Image 1 (cartoon, rainbow, N blue to C red):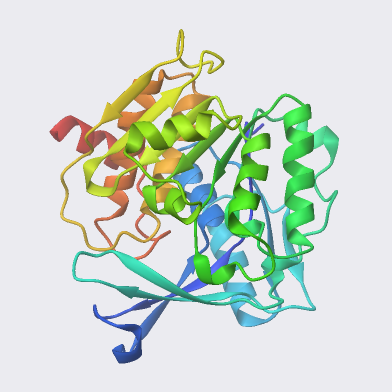
Image 2: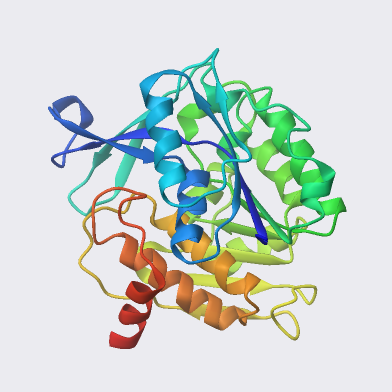
Length: 317
């Protein structure tokens, strides 16, 4: 039996074959993507295979994604096909430092059409952790479906984690900031970046950002800082510390090629470690190693490491 359920989109990422502005890129490589999908696949690579509730479109892109998810061992129980919708697309451009930006095509795509009640209460009662992200909340009916899921998960006693995953151009029908605070009400753990928080109008250093999150309901705040590592802070309700505490980890030095999916790799690493009962300090170190290793190859899913690769990086540094 799995301990984790991940919910959210699976889309196609078109990755450029060169760095620079999207308008000047001539060739792209098709890859499976979507932040929740990256988290689910990363967990599978880390031997903590989750249930994954996602919704794929009809046609060849949906076929490709379904085959990809099945090939990494994810259970197909909640991997749905929507014959009335296409699969969302994201075109990625990479800067000289391997940082990326996205242009999305997903109007009325399958990932916007989740239906409430798909995951039964009995399923939620059998797992201990549910993860979701902000891009599941930018369109109906998926917004209602995901909020329904995490409300019931919270009521069943599951730990609920949330990643705002700010993508400003996606937010046309709902207010991003209001939606994030609503998600915080259901979340026990929030993993965010300074950029996510800036989109909410919240600034400051990692300590201040984490404190702001903790003031709005979660008991654990994780702030990822790119090449500078990560920071975590908790209240005394967090089960992985004896009392409210703050922890910082400086990360690992690697030759970065593509940072696409690095934050999702971090999230998966942290979930895997905390589900296994590791202390917060250990979880942060492990999650940083997963994220760093994921930046050493192109693609989000293609670059996700297994435990041997993570252990090798931790051992070497």
